[in-house]
Length: 61
Image (cartoon, rainbow, N blue to C red; front, side, top):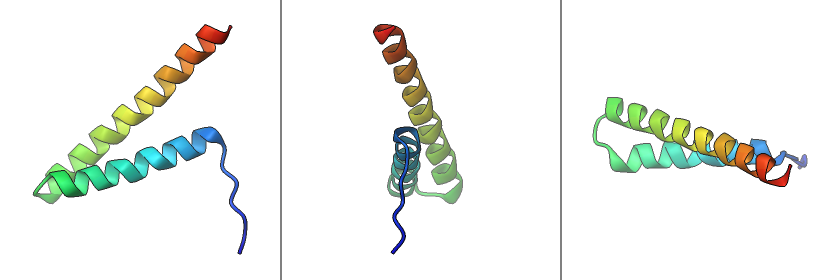
C-alpha cells in the first residue's frame, strides 16, 4: 500500500472538505440547500485556516 504524505495545510483543507460534506448532508433537506450550505461551510473553514495562519505568523514574527 502506498504511503500518503500530506502537508499540514493539505490535511487541514482535506478535513475542512470532509466536515463540510457531512454538515451539508446531515443538516439540510434539499440537494440545493445541501450544496449551498456545504460550500458555505467550506469557505468559512478555509477563511479560518488562512486567517489563523496569518495571526500565528504575525505573532511569531
